[in-house]
Length: 131
Image (cartoon, rainbow, N blue to C red; front, side, top):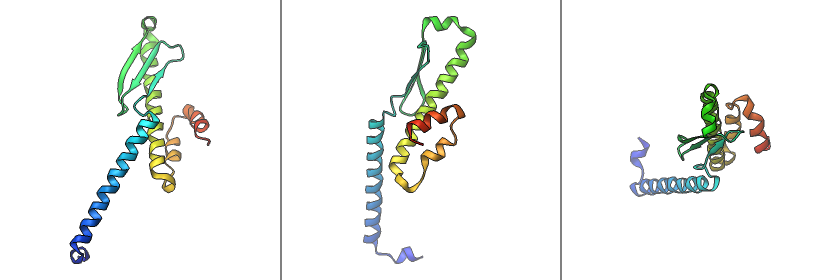
């Protein structure tokens, strides 16, 4: 009920400020995405025979399979799935870095995400982020 007694001009000013803040946040997000290369996630298998590339939304955009890899039918499927999982994890880390940068010290996004990573990826995450 107290909102009804407010000055309409004050309410309009607050709405305009909220819109300006949201636009500024989107601008920062887009700039960070460009700087951090969030749209350039590509993972290559250790032997170089398989490649997975994600788009800017974290979806699989390309899967590259070398001709020789096609001969390894039994291990091909699991190897591709593992590579996709690795690419998705790297994408998640990039998004986490961006969120942490946008939020600053208000929340430990990096710590929360680290706890959700598969065990074999935590050591790499810790080295990259000084934990």
